[in-house]
Length: 514
Image (cartoon, rainbow, N blue to C red; front, side, top):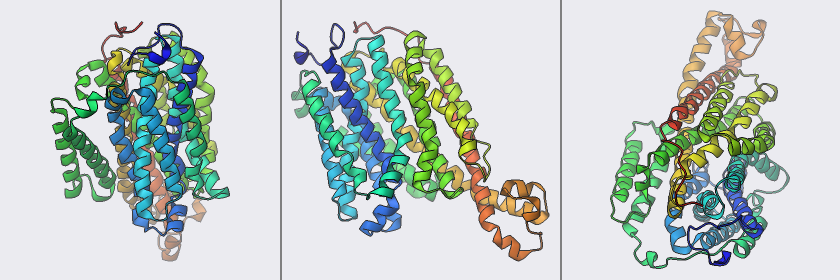
């Protein structure tokens, strides 16, 4: 059988030819763009708001609309791949993502920008699980899959690390339009390379006629309600009527979708305990990675008053460390058992996160350097063996569905992680600030340390004018202590994934693979 006539879900019998690797590289580039787009835009929201005259309270929807569409698309990858094949779903996704990027750049107002962001997010959501399913359908188990998993995993981690500095640079030197136009040339290159090099497979167009549209509507509505509920929880409260109604609607709709005779998303795959616990670990990893990646820029912006370009330069340490240590992670993943290797990764990442939980108002690049290095060293060791453990034993015909569930778990974990971070930071910062103010009024010596001042610079308890002059410093100290609590929370969340690795069942070779 020639590679161009490969059956759906059947990997090549021999080593993957160069053209398949080129096709996978094109897919990986598309995934990198989709993940990068989230972080590269967030640094320039004020510039977009000013240019398009958008109300400040609506600007968060530029990001939220993308994330909601992305989360809806991820679990649909499996059914779309069975209908159109991996090659043509990738072509549609990268083509749509590129056109939507052009549409975003040409938007003249809020409505048109949000519409294009929804389209961009949906197409970007397809690109992420496609790459991880391609690892197991295009390459042989062993070294080939280890290399492909490493490429996909490292790019998925590097994109958020390089996003802030890239967005800050573009905003500083060009215009906000180029945040979207930078996707055009890579998108065209990826589309052309994918069509020329990716192997064709059987398409099952008959599935399109039998598609359960009610299941599709239920899963889409349920995931949208869940994302909107998580977005509103920190501001309105987790027990507010609005948030509870949205979360209840999400549970009902997703539950209804799973009970359909032919569900669009194969949640039944979670009956396999290895995949189920793998998705749970992926959920916790997503909460830690997205949450930690969120609170670090918050501290640098609100406490240290750095601009987007400066923030990008500081957080770049994590990305560079990942880039330098990725080859080591690949070798370790190739020769060591995946379960203890993943445990080492999660333990090291938990330590790296906890190292940031002792910041003060003067913490900056130097103090943030080593915690970032530790986190960067262990991130790949979390992702690579966990992906192999979770998806490796899945039958090839179900890899696309399993990959969608696995990636959906990570993204939902990220959404909840960010919501929890906001809840902790903005829920505790005011209380900490009040306690610090009380310490200042009582003349306690530790007040100066919390404020990052010399004892002689702290005003006397009866100096009302002096107290007013340090209110900003008190607020900054309160935010810092709340952010430290968030760092500790994410360290515990990261460590909680370790016991799940031993609940995944024995490592077994898939009998359907070569």
